[in-house]
Length: 277
Length: 322
Image (tube, rainbow over all chains, first blue to last red):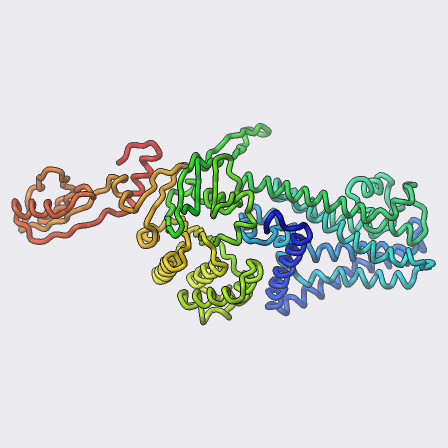
């Protein structure tokens, strides 16, 4: 990896490194076949029970803060898919603190592959597919049940939203984990923002106080994962009264998140390399 | 040509100690304090020093993991901290206490990953792997999951993994720690062979002085972040003021032998222990003893290198040399 290499070549190499190492972990996990299958089954079961709670809630009420079950299902499914995909791809960065503490980050820094790619692929396991499967199932059901006029822009918005949502969650995973470069035991911060944030996004924004929703627009921009684009798909008014452009701004938000996470990672790595452990 | 150039390299870090409930005190610690040395291509250098002397930190700076606070560093012509990823392809690192092999997968899989991550051309990969398999006796182990390997076998596996990409410099951090005598010998033989045949420059840190005696033409003693001694192994004895011991058996009990330049350390019946400077030849002394005393038998004991090192450490710490 020479400085003169183009950004595209470096990104390509990072993805390839991730893939190589994830494949190694995938095979490692398969040596414990029973454990893998049990883990996957448990994962699917837990995530489906999670959605069952939502269904139970709607048996007592037709609407939740003005949103129907199918509409809430759209939020729930997209939030689960985005978080599930991000967790599958980079969720392992939460182990950064442990690696910093034990000094095993060093073994990644002496390999000619990007340390972030190596860390993200660490302990890669297909059992994390559970949430993704559940998310797609709920999303698929909600898309058939929704009473929406499916124009082209709305149809295209669904994959676009999933892609941007995944990128945003990936960036949040990485960005929040970087805190562990300084505070080694702060993995919970990242967990509360990602898993907590995802739970927030599973429910209609109208359920929450306006300050909370505003925080997800202007603070950690999770609203761009599904709340804002869903307003366009479902043709609903914005609870904050924001301009219509916000509903289409997810790619911009995703790009900004990636930039911020990238800067945080570089700063963290620089701090690590200049303090040692 | 110097492969490793270290010029007045310093590394300080701040330690925060709690002082009362809220107050914290900052203290600056110099882990590496003005280190200067060069390692020529194909050299094998042993690095010793007590725990916390700054050896590991020096190796971390040489690999580019750690950025030095001051001074100039070059490995294979590049600045390690600035070009860490580029340098990674040209160095091999083995941590004795930390394996880089894949625990649950056959040994072969770890090597396959190295081939891809280091982008080793196929032909070279095959040549290097064959060589390592033969010299390290890995043939029967290639398809065994790493978790089933004994420590000695795993170490051999780690050595091979670090050398598949033909590194020009090999760093070894305590490569023989915890190994049994046979494994140690195998590891040392392999390293000597690699150093000689492949012209790989080797820098190893160790607490086992036999590693140095058998492998390294040159030894560096680091203490308190400074280079206390740098030279051939023999210099260690000179610097440590070490003494050899002549053990003589006389015909019967005798008062302590008195000869110029000799200390009689111990008397036990007919046997006496005479200490003399390590640099000095034993022959004239033996002749002198034989001439004046009823000599029956004798043997010469080399100084224990551990004692020599201990004396150097004590000297470096500012205490009087014992």
